[in-house]
Image 1: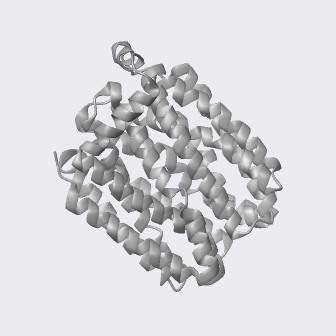
Image 2: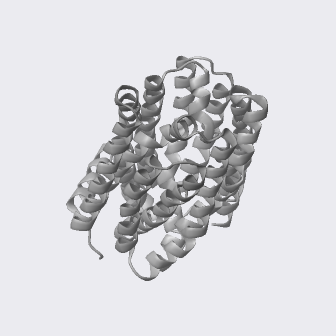
Image 3: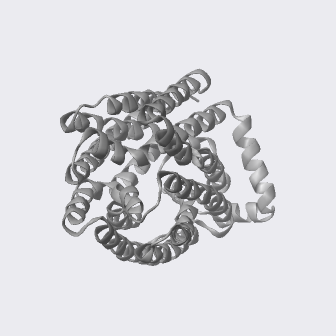
Length: 388
């Protein structure tokens, strides 16, 4: 866990630099909103494929390999990003960066296997805090760089930072990370084929009413958030009228709110109720989209910027701990990959749908659709999940 925290912090520095202004960067390369939606949908598709494959392989090959190796492939994607000037080059970069998704399920499983059951939500929150804490200041720095050097040169500098950080973090993990998968458990999975394991994990999830509710609820939420989130920078800068630096400040405030809330919320989940934590987070999301749409200026957006990160703190670590509690170690990464991949699958058309609605009918159509889906997501979780 110490290795994960330190390497996660380094990884997070690079990871927080480039996404903040990525949409504006791609627009500057000459792509349309619909093309951006296509690229983001491709990113979601690759996330599904690589995450699912990574989880199933993790239960066979071990957690460490599936955490370290994909990171080095990701570096190649960032190298392509630094030279990209067309849609085709961006697609190549997205494909290579997509390998990063192979480590998701392994990270979830390794953390669950490194701490006691009563500390799982706090372990997830601690790691997420280590990865994200640099986001308090890094997006502001990115905004200043872009204002002084321009969007293309500034964003490409961010990709270089990401390359250095990923190489450092992966080297630390390769040297110091310890394997947590028991060889006996690994053998139990190796005796079956990958497609058989996939079928078993899927059947296990769908036969559990609460896990099924989580799957459907978080899939709707994933679609809604991914349909609107990439467009928020355009809405806030072009429609509300804030500056690039102010957008970076909002990103920093958002990260700070997440960092401050994660550990207390995780302690609540571990000590009192994972289900209640998930429900609180779920019903905060529609409040976030509504308040963002009606925001009159930067001061209001400061409040808006704190809503979604707190909702994430309630919704994510409690969900991951809930899943880990219900699945034995030798099936854990595979089950995580099935659930997370299905949620990612739901987001594949989201960016394209959101951008298309935005272009044809305006921002109100995209905001309205997302708000309705987020309300439905919370109601499904309320009706069908239970504390076990």
